[in-house]
Amino acid sequence: MKTNKWKERKDIVYSTNPDFNYKYDKTQNEQVTIDPSKQKLKVYMDSKARSKGKQATVVNGFVGSEEDLKDLAKLLKTKCAVGGTIKEGEIIIQGDFRDKLIQILSTQGYKATKI
Image (cartoon, one colour):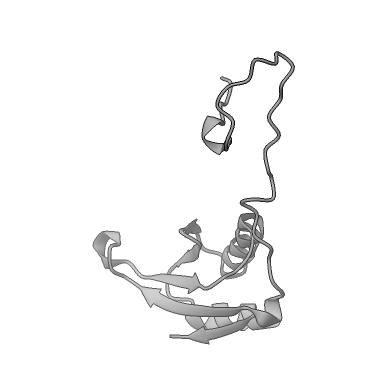
């Protein structure tokens, strides 16, 4: 199935040139990841809106690209040996691992605080 990116084309509606190829601005949506020592992450526990009130630890405040966020989430899930996910720029780890996550993040160079 061919992907049509017509919503990303700005100011171009139609072209009569058969060889016309629109060039997309790829740097438009990319966000640069700042240095871990300058990041201020917040680690807190959340149990609302979960099935049967299960606990989850949330890491919030990461500034950077989606790929770097996925790498950090994978590292945290591996070190804690639990599952987790990424939703709306937050890393959600299953269970109460606040102290362990703060320790892992500080060894990686991040400034993490427990809320």
